[in-house]
Every structure is written in C-alpha cells, then in structure tokens.
Length: 102
Length: 180
Image (tube, rainbow over all chains, first blue to last red; front, side, top):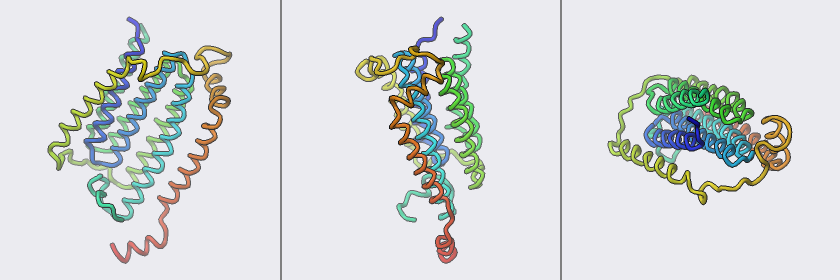
C-alpha cells in the first residue's frame, strides 16, 4: 500500500478543521493562540505535500516564510496578552477583554 | 511498508495532539499536546523529503515557540484548570458544524486544479546538485531574495513591538496604583 499525497491533504484538512473549531470553542486567549498555530501547521503540511506532488521547491520556501511570520505573530501576540493581563488583572479569557477600553 | 507504518503512527499522534490542545482544561497540557503535534509534523516533513523544513520545524516551532507559550503561561500564573462550560449554549454545536463544513470544503477543493494549481512554477524539486538543504537555500537566496530580506524587517518590527508592549513603563505603573 502506497501513501498518496491525498492522505497528507486529508490529514492537513482534519488538523485545520480541529484548529478552527478550537479557535471558536475555547475562551482562553493562550489556547486560542495555540489553535492558530495548529492551523498554520496544517497549511505547512499542505505546502510541503504540494511541493512534492508538483515537483516544485517553492512550497518548502513558503513553509519557511510561514514559520517566520508565525514566530513574529506569537511574539507580538503573547506580548499583547501580557500587557493586557498586567493592566487589567483579570483572567486571560476572551470574555474578559470584550470591551474596547483600556 | 515502513513509510506506511510511520505515516499512520505520526498521523495518530498529530490528530490526538490536536484534539488534546482543544480539549485540555489546563493551558500547560494544551502546550504539551501542541509539542506532540508539531513533532509529528516534523516527521511528516522528513517522510516527504523536506529535511531543512523539518529541522527548522523542530528548532523554531517545537522548541522556541512552545517555550515562549509555556513561559507566558507561567509568567501570568494561569496554569490552573478552567471550566469548559460555555456561557453561550449554541456556540459549541455551531462551531463543530462549521468545523465540519470547513473540513468538507477543504476535501472538496483538494482535487480541483483551479483551486490548487497544477503547474510547477519555478525550480524543480530534484534538479541541480546538492541535497535538499542546498537546493532550498539556493531557491531562497536567488528567486526569493527580496521576500527573505523583508522577513528580516518583519522580525525587527516584531522584536521592537514585543519589547514596547511588554515593557512596564513608570507612568503606567503610577496610573495603575492610583486607579486600580
């Protein structure tokens, strides 16, 4: 039995869906961030799979850029969470920061 | 045969890890499940011959980013169990349904040429000398040189922004003392 690219794509789709559901269901901001990471990883898997299928190296380079953007996003996002938490001394659930005031 | 066994093992770890991230009540457990998923991703990348990306995945994602997550969780002291009960009763079933719709859409788009593109655009995977690392490096430093340089600017902006946001300024401290 040979593993076709379809298997990878189905797996990536499943991971993306799990990440999306987690993003919608969870209220903890940090866990929501982790779900974003899950979705980014699912996309990375798709990129690498198509890179192999289409015999094109650009897919792997795209994964590289996604990694850089994810690192920057995590740094900024977590700094934002720390700043909000310091200022408001409430929990880190999304419901606590639903008002648009400092 | 070995590839098949490895694929199934990594797939199970990845899916269980992803579900663990969503279901865990403790954020620390979520982060540890995330490590399982990220490492199995690195395994998939090796199975598909993307060795450089796999190494970067382990170094950047599974270590640096997860350590940053754990560090912030510990810093804020939110490593306690939280109730998973939802104030909005409708939200969870609707979210599950939307997730299924997303999954079905992705599966539907998968086989379509107009959605995924069928043509190879630039360098072929196996042309030119050297291993995977050398070929990816050549691609980055020739075809994708300008995007690569721009990511350095992005990283600088992110570092400056992170420092500016997380810094505890004197004025803000005084203000928070006056008005708690």
